[in-house]
Image (cartoon, rainbow, N blue to C red):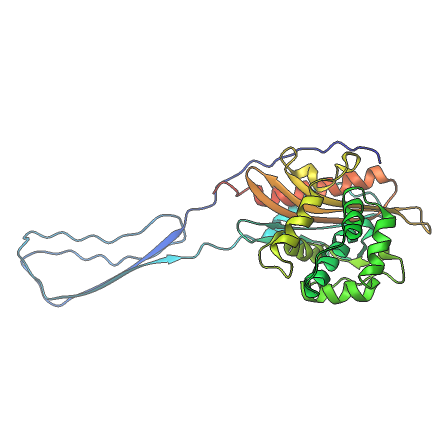
Amino acid sequence: MDRHRARGRRARPSRRTPLLYTVVASAVLVGATAAGTVYVKAQAHDGPGLVSSSASSASSSASPAISEEASVEPVAEPSVDRDALLAKAMTSVTVEDGAEVSVAVLDVDSGESAVYGDGTFDTASIVKVDILATLLLQAQDADRHLTAQEKAYATAMIENSDNTSASALWRTIGQADGLNAANKRFGLTGTEGGSGMLWGLTQTTAADQLTLLRQVFGDDSELSESSRSYLQGLMGGIATDQHWGVSAAADGSKWALKNGWLARSTTELWDINSIGRVTVDGHDYLVATLSNGNSTKAKGISLVEAAAEAAVSAFQDTADD
């Protein structure tokens, strides 16, 4: 595999508008008093800050017959449209004629996510994460550990993207039927296993791949902690010639990923995909970016890397708030 150097664009963070408060105060003056109390009714406005009422008294001992009610309630800040921010960031990504790209991202800390594009794509080798997740789930159900041979296949399949190992484990899980059954439990709704032994032609969406990444890296998962740790470890040990893709958005080596690449024989165009977890400025993000119709592998790699960087930038603008 050709090594592709990751780029490191970063958007400068900006601060959001402070939380607004509405002060609601009402006062009813029952009669004139010697204290000469002044009552001001507060009215909320759209800008930041507070509008407050004031009262002054000429005598601390005065007790006017007053009925007064006041409350201070926080007003929720308008939610950020992350999909819109991602779509805006993607306008700077160059997509050659005939190519398509879709990307999904989750900020692990906040739980917010965004998706750009809703097309269906060939998985190519990123399905190997799904194959291993399925195998681990089946092993859990059977209350057994992976065999030494299965572990050897798993290591070669994820770290080196070995196709022979993938085919062996594809058979073990029951091919598409086994994958589809596991994916139903994982919460994937737009993924369909490839026909026969064509596991690389499994169809999926960026949103579904983000759901799969949640299963691999999140606590709310069908996979046990040990199964997740095992899979995460393999995705963090990818061979050096495959250090490209979503890792372009990460700080140095703080990433775990699986890439997929496939030249379609009918068109000679490339499917290039990348999924994984990246750490940026102390924040963890799950990122899935899929593409097809690329004229060369190198252009496809550039596309998914730019998409991954755009995805993270949609959260970096407000990351320091």
